[in-house]
Each structure stands twice: as structure tokens, then as C-alpha cells.
Amino acid sequence: MIADDLKRLAEEVSLCHRCTLRNTARGVVFGEGAPTSRIVFCGEGPGAEEDRLLRPFVGAAGQLLDKMLAAMGLDRNHNAYILNAVKCRPPGNRVPLPEELMQCRPHLDAQIALLRPAIIVLLGTTAIQTFLGPKARVTRIHGTWHRQQDLWLMPTYHPAALLRNPQWKIAAWSDLKQVIDKYREIVDPDHVAAHYPKPSTS
Ligand code: SF4
Image (cartoon, rainbow, N blue to C red; front, side, top):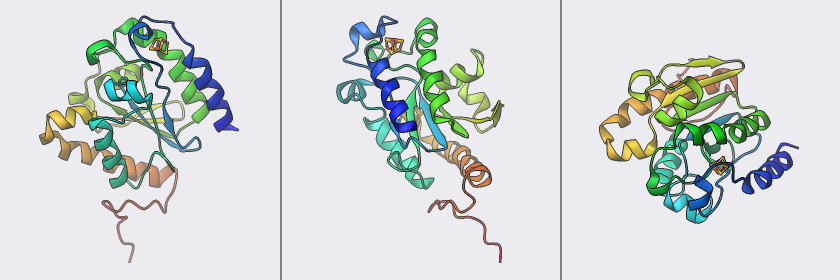
């Protein structure tokens, strides 16, 4: 079962000391959500609150992400999975270094291989560069679909950036509406999103 395999992987990753981030972090923040979900949200790395509780997106940015998910008809407990590009908190919340991202990449790949999502929403430049290369910037490519094998990738803003720049929220919601459209197209045609109802066919 996927849940058991994810649990085994989480136990394995919890022992990782592959990069120096583990020296200053309290522990490894593996990720959480519905194991059979077809949609994954990928952020940058754990912050202080995430490091304290060893759970992803539980601080202020996490609360905003939960609101974004709710607007999309999604919920980390039922139909979405949340993870980060690096699993240990960078000191002072700095951006993870390329070598740290590279060291942690096998964990991310193993998670994705088990989850087998149809869609990954890339939250912010670090997540975007992890999947789309070092030249990709959120401000330039948010809202445009990228295809990698069976995956649909949608770059958009990180909720922490939206807290700092609320004027970007309209653009972010436009990106997320595209995600809902794609989710209805390839995962669940009857998906209900209270803030983005399906167009009436009558
Ligand atoms: S950030 Fe990733 S690679 Fe580095 S120690 Fe933590 S789990 Fe291992």
C-alpha cells in the first residue's frame, strides 16, 4: 500500500544526514497528506514552526496554503499532499543552496515515485527551479503548464511571498483556477471547488 511505503520512506529519510542542513534543524520534515491524492503541492523547505512541529506548512504561510487549498476544494487530510524540495530547515530560513537541493532530491523523487500524482503545483522559485531548471523564475513562468512524462506542473507563488506581496494574490488565484480546471479534466470531472464552480452546462 502507498501509505505503508510512504511511512517506510519517511522513516528512512528521518535518519538522513546527507547534507549539513540536518546539523542545525531539529529534524526532518517529510511531508504529509492523502497518500492516494493525485495532486501534490511542493514548497521550498521547512520554516521555524515546521521545524518545531516536524510538519510541512504549519506556520503563517501554511495557514494561507490551507485557505488556498480550501478555495480549490482540496484539503491535506483528504485529497492533497504537501511536501518541500528540502526536508530540513535552512538556518534563518535562507534559500537552500544548490548542493543541498541536489542532496535532498532523491528523497523528493522517491516521494513522487510513490505518490504518482497527476499534477504538481510548484510553490515559489525554489520549487520551480527544482523541477524546471535554474533559470526559471516564478514571476516569468507562473500560470504556464509544463509537462514532464506523465506529470503536469504548474508554477505559482509561494504563500509566504503572497503574505509579503498581497497584490500577487489575484495572479496566484488565476494560476490555481487553471489547476482546478486541469484537475477536473484529468482527475475528477465532478470536483467541487466552492470558490470556482464548474460552468453550468444548461
Ligand atoms: S535536507 Fe534532505 S539531504 Fe539534507 S539532511 Fe535533510 S533530508 Fe537529508
